[in-house]
Image 1 (tube, rainbow, N blue to C red):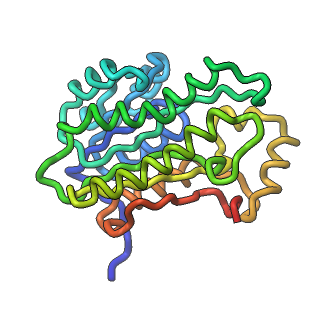
Image 2: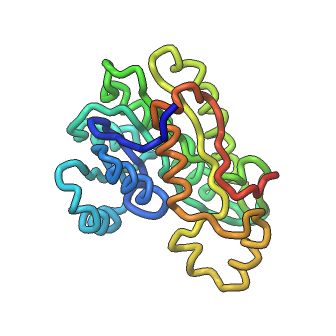
Length: 249
């Protein structure tokens, strides 16, 4: 037995939606652990900001503008990745929250296209980029705690994130004998820039629902990804890891 340390030197990852929020923390954590990382994001502004913040990592970090809803955009981003890949974190996602009565077809389709179809498009585009010599390839799909219990005003988001869990289980079956593990992470309430701007009474109400008595940090989600990508997690396949402070108990 040995103490677990995250050392990803000579490993390479792709993180979608990696220029902001949870995705940025995931990308930065892999870089800090020695990995090369290709950060994909739709927002050119977020990519520029991330490039400035991560300049200390030099040529170990690569940036690509990508629309995960478009197969051609994913293919172009994949072609730019300058290294073989062992780890993919499918994190890109959007929200268009409305009650079912007020939700339009456009609201529904936009979220499904990004949060579910986007995973398919990205992973397909990277098929040839995965390191064929590695028997420790990892796909980590970011779902959500709401996929496990539903949430008012999020018909589209919950449907997409629940689909991510089903997709994860299927890929785990299909790809396990090809050197992959495929798992999902389901974040709970997490302190992103958007959440931090919420009124104090709303934040308190959210915190009161969490058994450990605090909102999650983006580092909590990143740490879960670092673990699932490790060699020590090589026998974990097809699972959904809830990182929610016990919210779904």
